[in-house]
Length: 379
Image 1 (cartoon, one colour):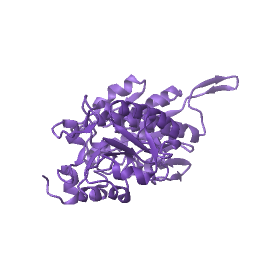
Image 2 (cartoon, helix red, strand yellow):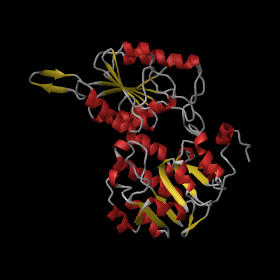
Image 3 (tube, one colour):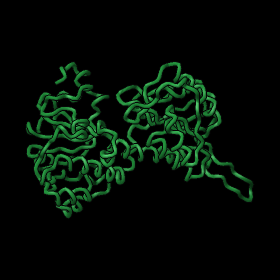
Image 4 (cartoon, helix red, strand yellow):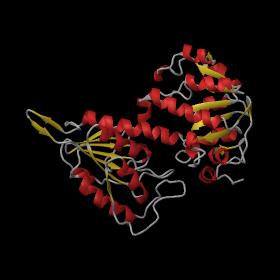
């Protein structure tokens, strides 16, 4: 079984799908690994490190035709997909629910593809949860960006010139990214409040030393079976927005992280709420790529509104490429173990993790949600 790792070509992408640490483990498990020249340089991994781990380093053109598995951070371009053999497997972040039409080239070529976004949220699959790994990095970096842009300091300081009060940070969404943002802001000395529609998230927030903001949503179910927040009714969302606006007006930093898989991000801060915030405040909208939680967010841009800075970063994990790649690589390696039978490719579609993450199997058995989006009959 041959695994190929390419240099990611997307603008601003510095991560690499596999790091030398993982390559060494895969080679020990009977797998051949080929790395494109320079694939890991932006993440801090030199070609010689891959060679020392047992990989072959070569040009892109030589990797694709012989690959049994192509592992990637971002979905491969159609040109790369066209160079793979018909039996090849693609594993990575494929955006199956956000951009299903982009998967047509691999489906038409009858390839097999696994989207790490679709890995079930079960105890057995925790080591393969790449979404959580990247959310951890994003939550951490969001706080650092906010601290760098805020014209105040985070911790309380008692100096000869007087006391400097701590910054007030409001985190919206207490999933993995939100919890990491809370933990990082607390380490920097800020006073932190957090809100999540899921009442169950309150205990996690409090365990990190932050205050959990609660609002009466009328007893509706706010969490699905996978642990993700459900899409709420307009009335329930408005109740949350009204409460959030009051606390945002007093905050120095607001970090928003609320997203619903395959849907537009819920609006949590209206334009009026942003206008009511104090001059110098900073908002980091981690949901910018799916529409944003803030009304004035512009994906990939910085917006100034009445002295408030609104940031809409699109790929924060790529700004910490070393550790982001390391975590992602471990997730990939754990998933590959499910389809590696002593160095041979063996896909068991009866395995709940394999089946759950499968976008298409040999061009058929297309994931129901992807099939519905593309108008393909479900097998």
